[in-house]
Figure 1 (spheres, rainbow, N blue to C red):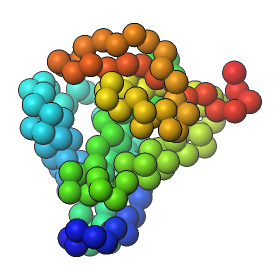
Figure 2 (figure 1 turned 60 degrees about the vertical axis):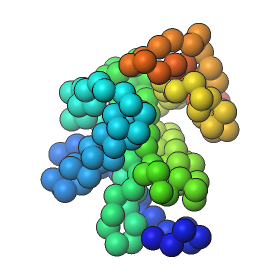
Figure 3 (figure 1 turned 90 degrees about the vertical axis):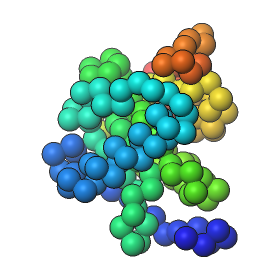
Figure 4 (figure 1 turned 30 degrees about the vertical axis):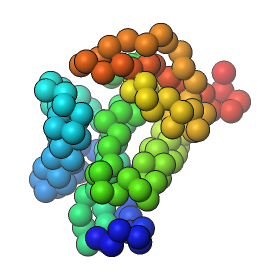
Amino acid sequence: MSDDKKPDIVWETKAFDELTLLELHDLLRVRLDIFVVEQNCPYSEIDGMDPLCTHVIGKTDEGKLIATARIAPAGTIYDECSIGRVVVKEEYRQFKIGKELMDVSILYCKEQKGVKTIKIAAQLYLRKFYSSFGFEQISDVYPWDGIDHIDMRLTFPGSK
């Protein structure tokens, strides 16, 4: 990968059973590399929720999975629809791919029937990033797997 050229990303949203075995392997690998290794958070990444969720995956035009997020329908993780497990491989973060990943994820949620809000559990240091999409803090800071988190909510216009 060139250090100065943003790669073209192909975005897909897939139900768990639509993921190929390679896509499942790659998205779990990226999540483990970031959440467990990079963030030194030695907790189980596989929590049993993936089969209930839609997965957003971003691949380079060569097919390399470099970004992923998990969208949980209302009533699974929270009462509201939620976006979680938002990750971009470290060497691609300079290209602001996390913003694209969130844009795709939010749009997917917004297009689902009945979705008026999205709730997330955000790492505290990412509050400003999520606020840039319209998320507002709705909880005090709390520790989760040894990392400070806050709950945030995005309410779509006209749907209070």
